[in-house]
Length: 382
Ligand SMILES: *Cc1c(COP(=O)(O)O)cnc(C)c1O
Image: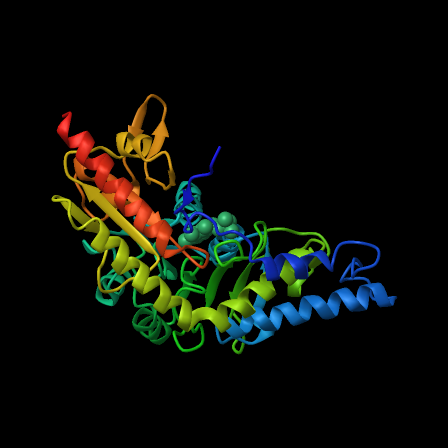
């Protein structure tokens, strides 16, 4: 069976072959397999050197100091560590977040809410952005943390984190940014944006799954409580033997991302235009999210009169995603689309198409043609 065209780069990316080759050198007896925490022999020293090299590569992408990078198992863990770690031990804490965050932030904040933490849930603009003024109005005397994503995974829209960061630094409130969908897709500068904590994932940037990082600002040090104890690795913030091959893979992937960023953005901009031009023959297509403040590789569209489930069934040759979740017997529309104020009906008609490094013009044209055909057919039998 021929595999469908992959248009779900926002869910995960394939590992770049250059990254996979690099990772293989850190597994076997003839490679660097030692425990990076082994201080007594060369196996450990070599592994440690590899880990520190990767730490520099990851820090470089976000303009940070390598000592500000803490390895985790992915952005989900980074989000948990940042938010729970910042709130732990604080007296009567209040946090501010939004309705359209990734579940890793939403569910963490909901859990904290059940533990007695107060949470303000900001509703974004219709285009998915959170504005600095909104955040400022939500601040209280006891606000310890604001957690917002830079690029939304369903919509691709981009919030101006530098404007929010500057305001929060002045107010003395910690700022956590989930940048899992921003890294490698747009310029991310943790220092310039005055961010205190920033979550990263390797597998959204052509690296392996199961590895990520949390940027924790230094000088002055941001204090967060460890959530995983056992040995005090990573400056006491995250214990556990470091997976050298995964870390080297993330480092290589981030190095490639720096190299490719400019040219890849241009390539994806032209694919986006090509894709939108391809579906332009159809009436009743709405772009969800922002056409101005966004990354190019994520396109979320609603098709009037066609529900996303039937459309996806028709588009068997395309691997795409709808943000809806099957809760028991009913299909719940995406909480992100509800969060930007879409009616259930329009939210039920939305699909996300995301492309990336290995997408081709041919695939984009094929996808657009398929969409036009299937939408036209579904509308005619209505
Ligand atoms: C994918 C993603 C995550 C989760 O990252 P994992 O590394 O898979 O745990 C968190 N936040 C955003 C915005 C994401 O896109």
